[in-house]
Length: 249
Length: 249
Image (cartoon, rainbow over all chains, first blue to last red; front, side, top):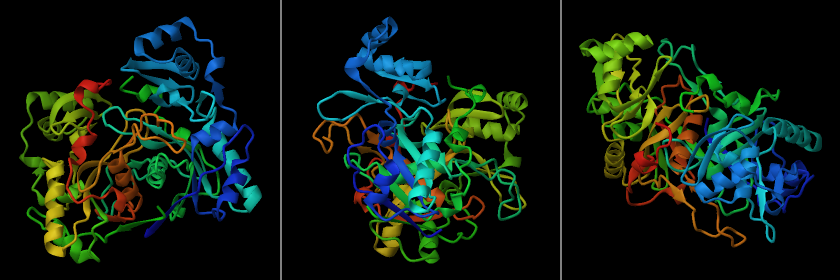
């Protein structure tokens, strides 16, 4: 590989429920082509899918009130985090680490306060981000004749490291894992076990292309056509470590 | 940002103790320039620093023998993992998750079997990878007049996700963390807490440029000059979550 093109699209217009993200992407610049990867911060997808809750509309349960008081959080925000989770793994220093309904282990179930003016909104993760990625890919193909891979991301913290990394939560047409186990290395020896989390690496690349205050949810990555495939594949769900292999929760 | 150059150098010659990695990099292609980031898989650095042990030379302790029997590992390999660690955090399914002397939480203390022909070697992490990065950067400057940032990486697994990601273990001249907390976003609201692990993102980018069987330890990343700085800075140690903030071990 030589050159990786990493191009942030200019900010999309404010996205409401039902917005046609594919059309907005195609209106914002040259159409991404078959070997490209269209990386979208989940917030745009979530808003288009109506995965948004007005803070004022939420009636917190006693458990949410209790956790909120213990951790100095808004009980309505805590309620939504609990609604999105199957398991509360740690609650400490204002952070709730949960296992989401999708299986992601992350802070606050990925529920963010939105910076919409006038109203306090919570933006949730898409219900099925792999499905969202497949739908967006199909729509891009329908409108442009090209079928780039689609990758949907969120920023996740890490257990033992500071800072967040953008992480794959959904994808279509991108091999999430690149499995080198059993392939001989260049000297003919077996490689040590090595499975590369390609989709997470691409998510991290894309985030380097935008400033966090830029309002640029979409980044087009080119030069990685070797990882793009015609079929949508199993998506980012393939990156979730099965619960019975989890040593830490 | 527009284009990111990600260029894997052709394989370096076999590296022995005392090898001048900077000279080998400069011999392998055009000199990296001030705004570039030279990303080096740690194995090359470790070998040049003599951080290599012959498996046959190691005399395992009773504890190493016991752990090795429980986890179906070579007791000499286990002994070196224990020597490199301050804490054994989990031992399950043949993997020892430890906290290394540097503070990294990772599998097997980063100790790999090397694919050197004829001899079974273990390659350890550098003793002080941030120091290694500073030394390499200074030597590149001395030889070429240019001072690109230097990033030293290893492949780490993740607690809740499958696949490995290349991760920053040492750096010089690269801001490991990009802290956006408190900066207003484009609509003038406070951003939610957001600290980006830039050095880890760059490590992940570089790994996309090489195949695991390529024997290409060095990747030059250009186009990220905004993250490169004249002073060496605190290095990748800044990415280690302090032990008293660790919720999971």
